Amino acid sequence: MTRYALLTAPVLLFCYGVVRLTDPTRSVSAVWTVSHVFYLAAFPALALSAVALHRLVGDRSVLGRGLVALSVVGALSGVGQALVDLLAGWGAPDKAARALAANHLRDVIPGSSFFYGFWPALAQVGIVGLLVLAARAGRVPWWCAPLALAAFLLPTLTSLDLIPVAAVAVVPAVLPAFRAAGSTDEFGARRRSILRRPAEGSRR
Image 1 (cartoon, rainbow, N blue to C red):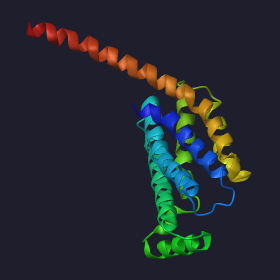
Image 2: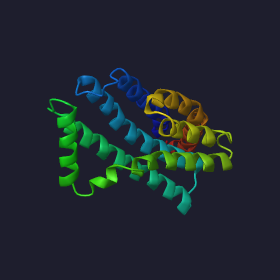
Image 3: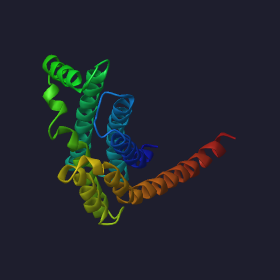
């Protein structure tokens, strides 16, 4: 079931980006809060996407597990960042008060520097790496990893306003993995069903 996270993650990022665009001022409002709820929810989906890709590849090497761990670390960082931002915005009368509250929370929460900088991006780095392993294993086309990398980098290198475009571009990058994981799940279910039949027959 974790394979559904491969499509859920870009959908959540798309929703975040679209809702964010409806208020260019980034003022304290329901729009800002809703957009950050989507942002928060996207990170667990990214971590589950890494787990799904790891299962698809079947790579039990240190590299494969390390890439999953990288995505999980990035996801935890992103969730932490979103929670700080949401708590700072809770009850703040304006953007200035929200910024002051965010600074205060960063001061009082141990290790809050882990929530910012490059740390959240590790969630995407792990996914790109796992797509490379999936391509090497013949489970997805070679272009999936470069497309995912380009999509993840697009908002950072250009403008955050392009997050919806980047999220749409992620879908074709992970869709082959989603389909391959589905066929793997079906094969496993059939195999378990076949193995179960002799056992049930022997009990009769």
